[in-house]
Image (tube, rainbow, N blue to C red; front, side, top):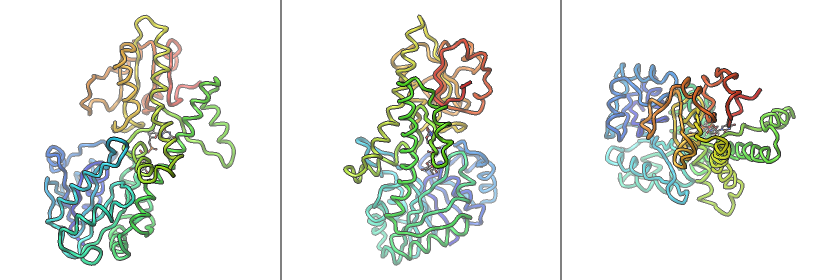
Length: 400
Ligand code: SAJ
């Protein structure tokens, strides 16, 4: 298995494609955006991820990684496309369907098709397999299908792609085995085999587990606001118990994973997934809670200037997908709560409807300072400056 075709060159597909290329595979990467294809073929990257630029440059430079708009014949096909939700929090599998349809003319006897995208239970059996039947090949005997859910943390993708343990669930044992053999050539972590449905649910469960635990922290923040107690002190103290490990509250839960995946479980078993749904509701309500707090504070000023720090969904990355920080900024602007100034170290990379303000200017002009993302540079802000301002610190970094 020497030739690999990777469908989707985003946060998962591009790192995977370039790691495989540096392992000696011939990798044909596919993306629907011409701009993305051009950037990669020139040795550049279109996303921010530590060290990815070096790896892509090396992979493209060696001639082992090429990007294109159309798939090509290969031994293995990776599907690494987005799986968002659509109206009513229903999984939107359009991109997986389109990517699978696109490879049909290229799939040959003996090929392996791997779904890496986080997907609802049944996706391999009910979406991928029926589409691949159009090849005329016998599914599970002449063409193999497996789910190998990605588990990497944005900001640590390269390290985690190689070092994390992996779950591999084939539509039959043969598919699992063939897929595992491939992953063993570039993954250092342990590989655990199961069936496709269990692998699909395992990925959703990992992110739901984290979402539920963050919801607990966010609920504590809401409770502490009512009781006038410092939630950060409370959590630090409770975490001194040997079996308690409460996560951090924040302005909400963003990103393309935690804010989306739990809904895939709720969608397939709505009557049973009660805690998972409630956690989502608590986390989705958090941006509104923060917005109301700022609105209340703004009433104290004639012409309030509100300085918002951070728009990405978590610190030190450029990703704004499902970002609660951005949602809060937009609510403040839409409701005209005051003059809204925004700073984010990664703002320049995004085409947003507003412009950023230099950090110094924002700090000197703001009446109300809203810390939304704990980007590293914000820890160095002079605390004396904060004394003169109304403060909404959603990440607890400015506590005395
Ligand atoms: N957050 C909090 N409080 C915390 C931790 C996180 O409010 O204590 C917020 C973050 O600010 C962010 C959101 O949660 O808005 C999600 O951030 P994250 O760092 O928890 O996770 P992601 O979305 O960047 O990556 C997750 C990871 N899943 C788990 O840790 C179980 C990653 O391993 C997955 O590969 C990734 O989802 C994915 O692609 O599914």
